[in-house]
Length: 129
Image (cartoon, rainbow, N blue to C red; front, top):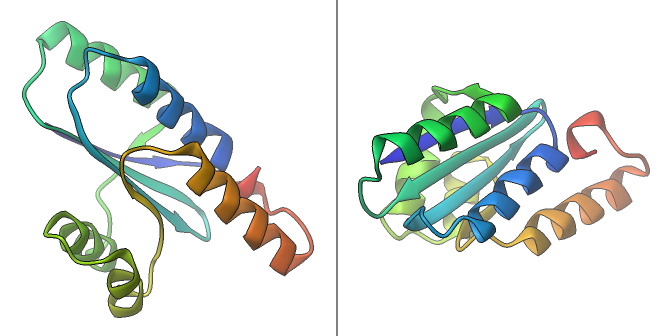
């Protein structure tokens, strides 16, 4: 099972990471986080099928935070590349996307990306709040 969602800002993305850390019933295979100028693309892939109730609860949680997303070709290819084992650096170069995290969810990846981006800009865009 997999879920691909579009989230408006870093705070919402961090909430997904926290939920995945705290939810023992979700057999997480990996989480991929990609930052775009207008928001965040999050792909959650589970290693096995979960109960209909757990799936509906998780979907409801994601729907509260963002919207289901059908990414464009570059992001789709980047997600595919990461899933097939290509390194995040190679994927970023090839598809010109900002891969913030791939694998085990780690809030530090998102926080460090946000801090470095804000430091470089000198201000905090809404998507990084």
